[in-house]
Structures are given as structure tokens and as C-alpha cells.
Length: 124
Image (cartoon, rainbow, N blue to C red):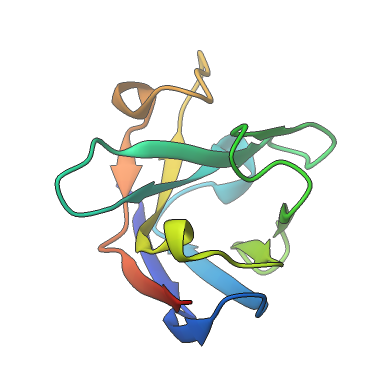
């Protein structure tokens, strides 16, 4: 069983930057593909980014490509999401998730463990 705890959300203005963090415990962190998803009120959960077990491969949703960067530190059981040039449409609850093999980085239902989420609000 893996526990995931996100942190770093907040209230920002358009154009700001922010880094979200997620710490994992209770499992072999380096064995999991890690992902970030977000969910805005009244909308489906949306894929944001994912990173392979060793960190060499990353995946991004079209709406964040070029602005967000996912990274991980397996020694610290941490995954990060650096968000630049934030827009009001980035407002959502952001969730960290862990995926066991076989991996399906883009699909929420493929992930096995989820954090509780952290709110990011971007004002115009």
C-alpha cells in the first residue's frame, strides 16, 4: 500500500509559477510510474503529466506542454510538478498518483494509488 501526500498548492495570479510536491511512503517508489492529474469543478479528471520509474521519460497533456515540468527524486520518494506561466484555466485540485506495471500514463483508471489533492487557484 502506497500513501501519497501532495503539497504546495495556493492562490496565484496569471503568469506566476509554482511547484507542487508529492511524497510517497509505504511502497517501492522507484517501481511506480508517477503522474499528476487535475480536476476542476464540474469537469472530469484531466491528465497533466507523468514520469517513468527512472525519470528518463516524461509525458504531458497538451494543455500544459511547454509550461509544466515533472520530475522525481527516487532517493527522497518525491515527485514534483513545476508549473510556469500559470493561467486561470489551470485552476483545479491537483492529484499525485502512482501506477504499477503495466503502465498507462495517460489514463486515471490505470493508476493504483492517489493522494488527497492540493488546490491551485489562478486569478486573472
